[in-house]
Image 1 (spheres, rainbow, N blue to C red):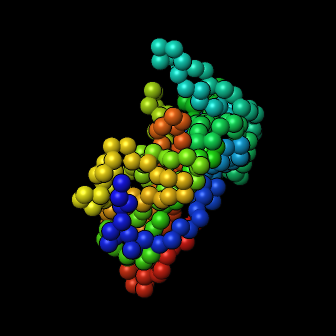
Image 2 (image 1 turned 135 degrees about the vertical axis):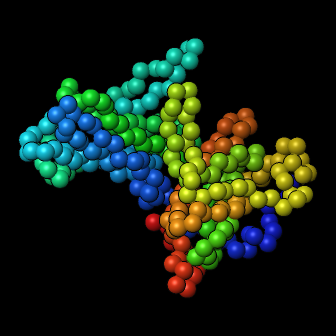
Image 3 (image 1 turned 180 degrees about the vertical axis):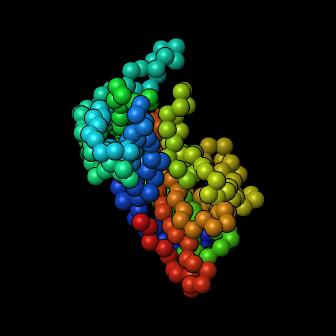
Length: 293
């Protein structure tokens, strides 16, 4: 198998060492609201959308009402347990629960932060879904914000930005795979997108796209994965480079990328990587390799 190496790769920067702990806040879910019968609203903001398994996630609650008064909200941290026989959903596992009292005020009362420690699976290459759910008997709905946890990579992977980020127009980036195991590794299937997904019925997607940019895999003719082997593999220590062309929507200068790769063989192995970059303003000189946030 030939490596995906051609003119575009020369514009790719060296790995920057990003990790989901530092980039996790960039993937946090949208704010959710708990609406009371009397018009009071409690907002929920989770501090991150992805994190290492066994870590902590914090939710910030703010109560807003026409007049000042106290409201009580029940919080539960729930782990999604997937589906059982005949596609029947298993009950979620409660990790933690508590009750909080907030001061509801016009324009929003003082924020209350609640932190939850989330369970860790014992195996690498796994992700779990957790929801922080807010309820009260006086509300017309329940509010939920979710986070994905990752147990750790089973082989090396980084997302690499261009060495020079253009102020406008399309650009290329790369996903670099390295076989850090002691055995040959089947070339992984890679999914690259902008956002953390979630559980939706039987569907559970870690990586999803949004309309901030269009992205497509770029391959030089004749150098595809099956050009010389039906079952290409990486030797221990070898690397594989997948190149992507990114075309951001006009006016989008802050870009997030999340890659999930799975190698299917006698044992399925997986890896996760993140990248967060900002375009330079058009009146600035393009910088060199960008630092992730």
